[in-house]
Image (cartoon, rainbow, N blue to C red):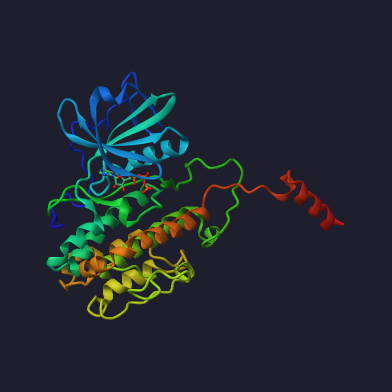
Length: 377
Ligand SMILES: Nc1ncnc2c1ncn2[C@@H]1O[C@H](COP(=O)(O)OP(=O)(O)OP(=O)(O)O)[C@@H](O)[C@H]1O
């Protein structure tokens, strides 16, 4: 890290290639916001490389170079469906922030009759957050560095929440460094599950009914519920950052047990010895506030940003942490941890999609109708 400068946490707009603040070109269409979308072939402006940077469930990310400047970018290829449009739109809206991966250009091109969205992003060459900490095995990784990282992540999330956008997929794989080395900036990416939470967001015409699989969003209201999912994720990332293992292990060092999901839901976790012995009480206080099972009790991003451990991260003790060593010891279990976090995030989202559940009266289900008639008698 080591990037404590005045622009920290603020928006930046330095790239001349950016279309932001420019009106859409004559041959471009626009999405819901002012995002310009080019309809000419992406290959006119960028040379696409065979180098695959990553593959996700929604599409491939490959390396590309701007034909005029030779600058390297990452190109995400998505099938042009409404969900992808929402992803690109919300990511673009937020992409001016220093700690959010920047989108430079968007194209809508058709390949073999399939409409695609092609998103040109800054190329994140520094790898994932925890891979970088894992590489630190030889030098001490301190609580203060952990606090600085959390400050950066929280800045990005505060920016999103103030724009009424919930990310809903904050996890270690979506936190990437811009470059290798100490000048790398940590940024949040992958808006595949992001959602607008303000009243102007498009909602179904009818009042939605929510299925509370994970918690009760109707108690909190959908807006706050979506944001509270991000807060839970921040809590998990912070916990791992300070010790190297997730909060909901069956027991540190043992494989994930089937009961882990239940424990996540009931919020059972501990701060085991020796990893947590020297971690400050202030850090544990933030984690306790973030990992509350009841989303209405969980800290909001503004509350976290006001907490001394985050605000005064430069005063946090420089206690060496076990994190790099534990991450190295437990490489094998990392993918299981990722799966479990993914499943939990998914269950939180399922509880709060804009799902309209038909009333029984609207049902065309013959069996159900038969049963209702029986019950009336
Ligand atoms: N801007 C970037 N620069 C470099 N690599 C990137 C960039 N964006 C994404 N990647 C790589 O591509 C992978 C997939 O990207 P992304 O997470 O955006 O796709 P996705 O289909 O939404 O994935 P997921 O399955 O995680 O939801 C990432 O894990 C990362 O390794």
